[in-house]
Image (cartoon, rainbow, N blue to C red; front, side, top):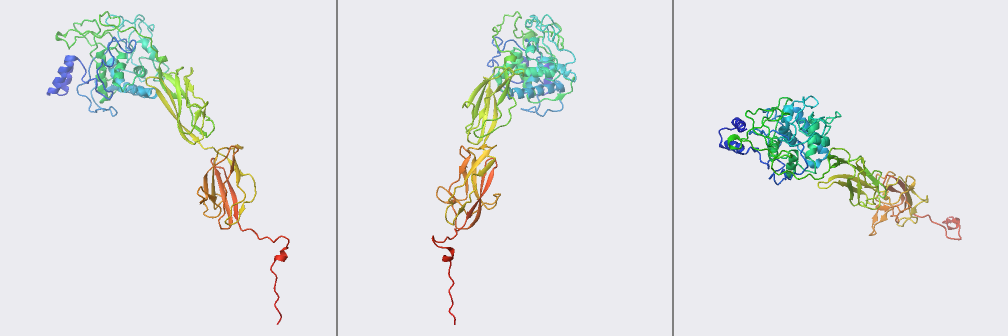
Length: 587
């Protein structure tokens, strides 16, 4: 391993003291070049993350603590600090990722981002795990569907240097009916695959040897227990749940940091296989250690970090016969099928209603488990926020509903308040890292489709006087009285109301000043509206009053200003009151 690192150094900067110091540090500790604090996820002390094998977070490990590759990234890292969005075209095969494998990692990242966005799974973490578990599916040796050209199998987990895990799948996945073996490019043991397996390529099968299925399963597994992988401690716990080894965490972290700084795509089947497997606990080095291929029991290697090349015991594993502290007895934890994963809209349509009316749509959500299947018995809290006065049936602003067997929960009926405007309904489910959905809703003012006068009496006033008869109208909506409908009254010059009038009849405001538009009128509970008093100025003529409602109903009413006709005194005839002609005397 030390020679391997020195070869990398010569490719970089063999003449610099900095590079020499880096080689010395790596050879002394076999630690990755990047610290755990590198990368956007942060880092920190792995012990603080809780990776100690005697107190790890989850029961068991995804791989059964099978062997992994300890090869480290090249010392010369990609010159793309902080981003892998623009992948370079060329580079060494060792650093590149085969095209189908890279596509599977990115697809898994996108899928999990949809169903569990708060996990913030980066594809580079999947790539780092895939690198140390199988050398990116044996250098990308997969068919057009993403399935490995031959099964990738780890050694039998028979307790001889490895964990002791007796057969759980009848040999269906690993062709071993006695003991389990880690399977596929992401190296799931059959019992873990039975719980977390996915069909990501849509072929109807959950195949651990298919990179698309395996990458998505790994992504969901890493996101379990409400982890946020943008938090260093959560990321470390996720990696340790895959393989309970501090050295494993550091190796994955080193590749994760490397891929975050940039990588490049290479053709399938051209990737370079790692050469250095981890050393099983309790093994002795082989006199002529070879380079095992994935799927075979790796030969033990001398450790470069001890004088004389003596082997360093690997991580303690259940059933390996070592005297290291054993993991605590497993506690009962939910299975993936019982673990809440995501919250989605269950087809809720636009939320609109007229003031005082019930909404036709009801807010509905769908809860899914960690595998993406519908999950029942999840408590969902719905809350109305806004000042429209809208409430759920029963007058409540907040209600809690549990999902049914189909994973859906539907909030009670919403009844719009009296104030027009917008508000929101928020659905929240889950503890630790709750999932939240927010729905926008609108309350429109009460409407009328018809408005008309209640009588046909002519409305006439003398100049400078007020109209003796009040204007009364009734608004209806779908032939029913339209209560609480806003009505605007405007003096206009034309029946369409395109031009306002600045003379003729007028209303008075609170200060007694003339106004020719009123926009604060509302129909009563019977849909009736009696207009305020109307006054006439000194200009005679016929004028128009236009009334419009929310909903577009309108009516135009004539108002006349004219001087009254003269009338004869009582007890006389018109002839008697008419002016008499005077006679002119003859000359």
